[in-house]
Image (tube, rainbow, N blue to C red; front, top):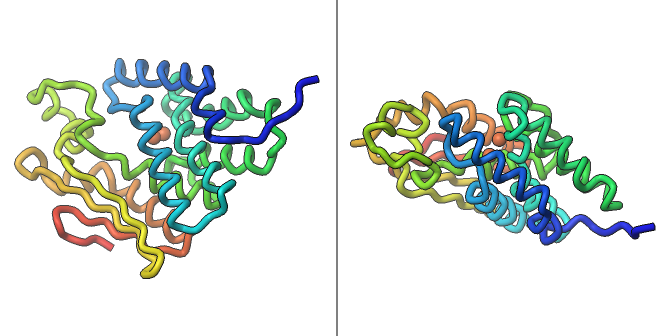
Length: 226
Ligand SMILES: [Fe+2]
Ligand SMILES: [Fe+2]
């Protein structure tokens, strides 16, 4: 009988199924006209999860959980976009449930994947709160798949993402603040367009920060919205 192994980020990021599901997700969502949800997004969200967990002073095991959740959170999109968070959570269990004996880690990551979108607001662990902030803060022109500027202008998600040319997330453990700053090209889109599509996501980030005992501050072009 095969012996069980711990749940590590190294193991997850080199898993053939995880990477294939990410590729399938990216291909499907690009065909549907969405921004990047593939390897680029997975790596950025995972690295951001790791950074937040480290700054919060979490244990090395909790940092691994956050990195794993960040990498895998969108793997369910190739099955179904509208419920991708639930599919992703179950897929994660399907891939790793029999391989690992860290059931607590498995459960925490499953919950984080299931609750990363505000449509399914049900989280009550730190991994989930961290993932929400890391995921919803990945807004940048590099996420826009199409390159035709005239076409980009016709879609609000593409337009707003493309207008963001700088993006920074800072965790201040002394002041207990999470500062998310973006620079938005207002010649390309209005700040109101950003709020039109991101207000629920930013409110969800605020809820995630609140769970972690932090205040969430959004800064757009040097203006603060706390
Ligand atoms: Fe997602
Ligand atoms: Fe995502």
